[in-house]
Amino acid sequence: MAEGKLVTPVVEAVELREKQHYLTYAESKVTNEAFCRFRNWMLDCVQGERTAVDTAG
Image 1 (tube, rainbow, N blue to C red):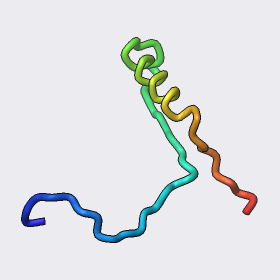
Image 2: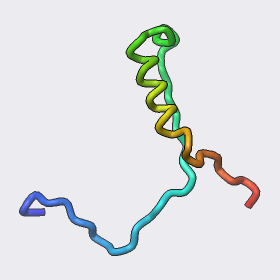
Image 3: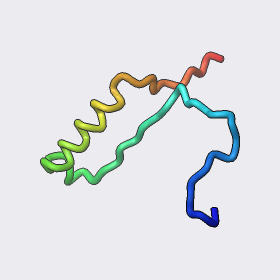
């Protein structure tokens, strides 16, 4: 830390296989062009991800 470097404190890694994404926004932004571009970009990014949580088990 004294050198200002980011280091991994352990060897093990955690891979999240299930994710949830939330996008909240003011109703007035639903027709805002910049917001719509961002929303569409975000949805495209997460479209192929597994986002459902398995509650069966």
